[in-house]
Image 1 (cartoon, rainbow, N blue to C red):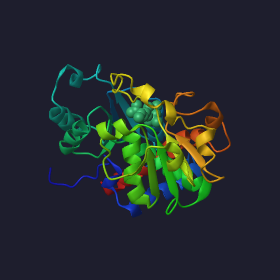
Image 2 (spheres, rainbow, N blue to C red):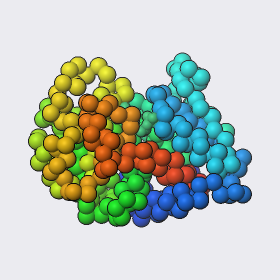
Image 3 (cartoon, rainbow, N blue to C red):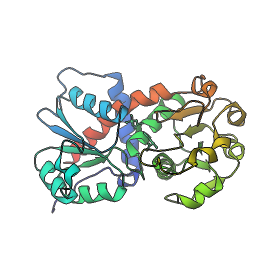
Length: 298
Ligand code: CP
Ligand code: NVA
């Protein structure tokens, strides 16, 4: 492919300035949710190639395209020849020759990289086992809406070293916040984080003076076979005994779906500190701004 296409496979694909611009635009789009006559993606099609379940990612991208006057195609492995072994390279060439933008949710990150390499249109990561960058756009937007700039703040991640944790590691560099990570020691040894981290075995130490506490499920999609994975995390539930060490006005986030009583207590999940519903809704606004940004680059 001769033309440089702007993909969004991880936060590393965009500069800090561009990420901040996207979030500011998302906040603007949220105010004017459904501007009449504004149809920047009229006659454009977004394909959603999803190999894993999704509520938020699918709905937010589909609604984003409706707001922008465009169309979507939802393709599960049962619908396409990908599910019957057609190579990723060939599938990418064919789908991208007909649509304008592609969101992929899959297992291995190398699969989305291969798809993007063979695509003639921008590819967005809708979640891989390694990263979930769209969720971070919504999380950063939600923090900024509630508390202003996140630069210089302390974020505490308690939980598995998974796609969300790795995306927070990338975000700490892009948005300039301090990140502390806490999980069982053998998890950190088994699942290598994508970059160096400030690691604490004791979640209380990690949560001290945190402005934002984030967690996620102990078992991610595709990770179900890690035997006794959940038991290892029993001391890592985000509950009041941990959050009492955070800053008084800390914010709690979770990308959802949540397993209340496992990674987070009901008390914290339903507390005034929790912004999980705003965070979920912001997927729509943040991705509208992302789509606009990527399509403008085209
Ligand atoms: N947070 C998130 O990506 O949710 P879904 O799996 O429902 O898309
Ligand atoms: N870490 C979770 C996130 C779900 C949105 C998973 O990959 O299943």
